[in-house]
Length: 194
Length: 268
Image 1 (cartoon, rainbow over the protein chains, first blue to last red):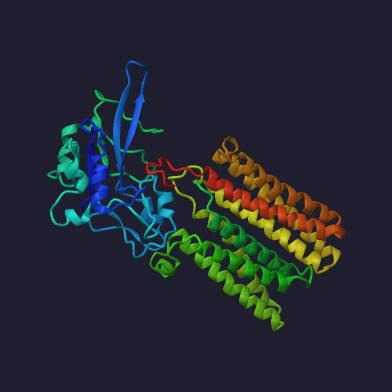
Image 2: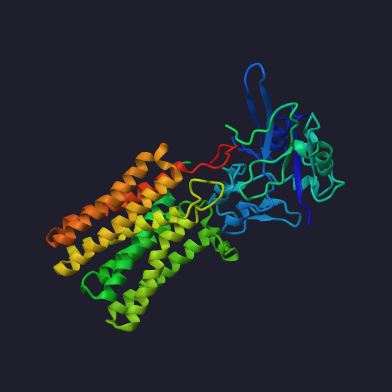
């Protein structure tokens, strides 16, 4: 079975927020809501040896997704490619999935009163295009693809980076699939983020 | 996390209603008094219905709630089923009382209602167990829900039969059960507060209030009435108000200390 996700090369991310804006434009994400957000980590360390990196965060496409487990109506579900999605027609607005998400990367639509989230731009990928955040990244720091397919852009980026440079957000049993590449020569990966 | 008042009221009121019926049923089994059964069941039913309605106000699309039938493993589904079953059993119990049906059938329905009522707050608390929120992810949380609801229900039963002028032996026994309920609330609240780290944070006051109002005061009132059943109305009233306040405080504390692993979008 496929596991589609995004890989972000933090060595190349310049923190321009372009992915954030592209996502908002493409998916008409409302003011104050996010499907993708760039978080600044740091600066940390002792002067003059300070480190900092930018961490774009979105749905981590967890293999054991807590959001789909707690959803009472099945509105949060996984499709045939293991992409975690929300069927807005089924969402009752209980927000349990937002509580259950370890990363707080689910969003609330004030106009529709339902939960929404990154869809990996299914409307684009279904016709062979890249998710908008990937296509818009001026640093070519984002890669999309099936992590089970060694020929996908995402798998190639991970293979090229080497295991020591590949990181994932803290796992509390949910097995996040979204991966981040950060080389120690640029910054140390921080699991705890203020 | 913001206090979700709809859910606080839902769990506090259905817990109170469920445990009030627990003591109605217990009285059917032990036969301490012939007072309070009908009024207690009506009150339990009203509390369960009002609590259920409070939970609906939390939802933005309650009209889609039937979709839960397709996903019957979630906590919300369990809560909805328990509320529904409890209401059905309470109505059946009321009908049996009206028709003066006694003996084994009434006891059987009472036992089913007692089980559902006792389970109600525990399962409501179970809904919040999730690895993403460490402060909630302990079985002590549903036990706290259960303990505070038990104290509230016991105090409500004590007040009810005291107002209906039950004999002293029954009132004294209700005082004893209120003492037990208060102790359960006190122990479970303190245990959850310690395990979740709530005493160290900005919810310390709320957890302290939950332990004092929800546990210590009902326990003290129950002990007092146990020994001096003549002052049961005042003791029961104080115990009920304090227990309900403690029950609400415990649930508010849970929301205040609930923080996810990360909150990147800042929406929780």
